[in-house]
Length: 498
Image (cartoon, rainbow, N blue to C red):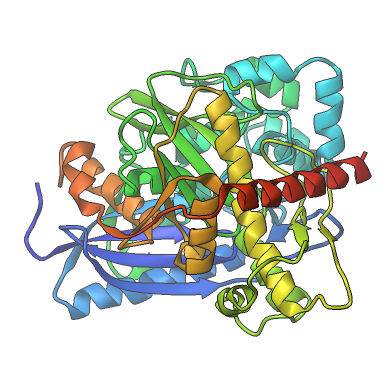
């Protein structure tokens, strides 16, 4: 039951930053704290994080929000966690010492391993059991790489001395003082080791990827009891009652509770997820089948398209080549042009995700002339996000999902130029909610459910409120010309990587 003077603490641990957001019992946002942390690029296609950076950033933001709750006279009654998915950590079961940097979901180092497995004919069996493709995006080959490239780890893993975890598992381990090694069904479904049809770790998949099952966490509902956060961690003890991968949490926060409803989150990458209810669809168009959420033992499935680079391309323009001083500057630059002047950017900075799945693809810019300037780069970068979204929508349509509109969230959803261009290119209504922190809201809702402060998802639907609807109004012939230019750019990029 909901308590007076209570609050929910939601952690949104993302690829480039960690956030803690304090919510009231009615879903209002009371405070937010955010810390960025370093991205490590050891070589082309490799992306890592220091586990200590992840944890320290979570500690800082969590302590700030616990102090905020105390200043408001509120007690935190439950916490929820949403996390960057597929990112892989391995640590010592006794000491908690992490044995290698976290290998991030964007990392491409296991491309050859995935191709070998595909060439050996394993793709269909993997897809049937997991809903996923054979790609270095997912956790299994990352685990194997760490075990095979750090001396002495494999025998220790086989003896049960090591734990594997996605970021949620790692955070829960830290928060509970090493008492709990757990994950939820959504995160498990992104490892390539979990059978999403029978809801179990799959011994055959573990054998295929050479991952000892002794390393794996206990899998629970997204509203399960994940343990008690110790009082000495953040300054107050509280139960962890809701966990989901960030895109699954955003699906909850966007109130996509009915079959066919679709949300798309624009952060470092872009992730579109459609609710398919109890139907575990096997895509014929290179989309992913996944567990959208699991509550009271009931699985709700989803169909997902993953774009590896969306907000990260703006970050690259800012930090990588210095064309922007702030990410927000991209909107004004793009809007300063009446057209893209034939300049297209394919932001395959870490390969291409759905529906192309080309880990060896590299970023490209086409149509440069002497007149091309920073505004063209900014516009081409933003337009590339809409074009990639179009590719996902078309793949979903081909798989039988007919969207009537698209709910958007994430940092890039605040960019009005991008949202309007998105509506024009998709020829769909694009709805931006009043609260775009839907990932954290989803984690909070799961914690409310898990702690008994609300009883059904449907009761939380009223927490979603519309801020702006973007309606398509671009001339159809202009739209077709723009799309033709994009398709040419994609084809050239794919040809170049073969």
